[in-house]
Image (cartoon, rainbow, N blue to C red; front, side, top):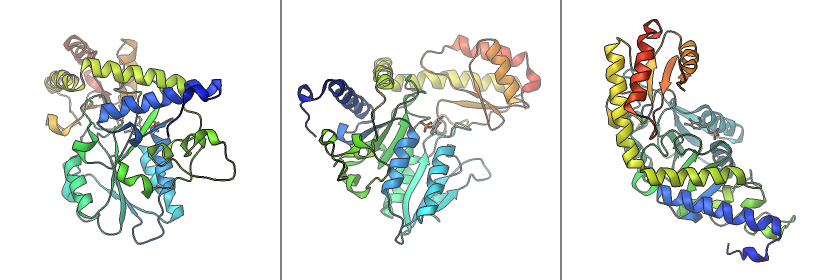
Length: 342
Ligand SMILES: Cc1ncc(COP(=O)(O)O)c(C=O)c1O
């Protein structure tokens, strides 16, 4: 929609262009076009808008997920069971991996969508997205990637990955704040979803103010909702620009070195790393098995070290601003608390 912002009422003059600037910044980051991006208030809001736009009445009513998904993904797709969807989970195998071959039996002519996470928030494992996309596309099934745990920590290029939809937020490795998310939708698929979870910023003409009609925007803006989160957008754009300036590929290399140091140090302490050791099969976070992860996180916090506990593991997520000295400090504090290492 071409909008002459100078003709808009004063309160919109700002809201509209800043949202368009967010679309442009995110599009650049993931190698998409701004029209392929919706600005949302969370990852969940974007995925829920997409889910609301799909119809599950026909034979193609199966949604395929993995057991590595963040709760919101499982919950949104299971909510669609009330609308006729069938949800199938691909489990972890005995090696703790989800190999692409495990998708072979579940992706078929009845599959509507494959919805997978790029990096698992619980164990840091990275999915072989290329193989899953190839398999899904053989059956003409689109793929939605949850990139929340990868975006900003490694280069994410929607064209190179071949994904059809991608959702994320900005508060982790993009250094933004809560309240902002993005949904990418490949241009060829805009028409395949007619969202019923919607709002006036998703309308074809936001300023028409028509209460007698619903005509979603022709592009990915159809997945937006009400007034965009203007304050979070400022932080979001600044975070994206900062990560671009630092360099995301450089950050990935830097963090890999930090994580090698961390993994070696945990081995030396007799601890157990729950994250895959192959750097190509993990994201930026490393999980360490613990006898009491909650208490360990609390004690590290007292030393000024911010970590989290997931699945009984200590989760350490270094980023561009961390140094080898930081890792040595973490290892020093773990050495003083070996009883917490499992
Ligand atoms: C992989 C993953 N997906 C989704 C989310 C949550 O997204 P939101 O709260 O923006 O809906 C998170 C947050 O931690 C996450 O790690």
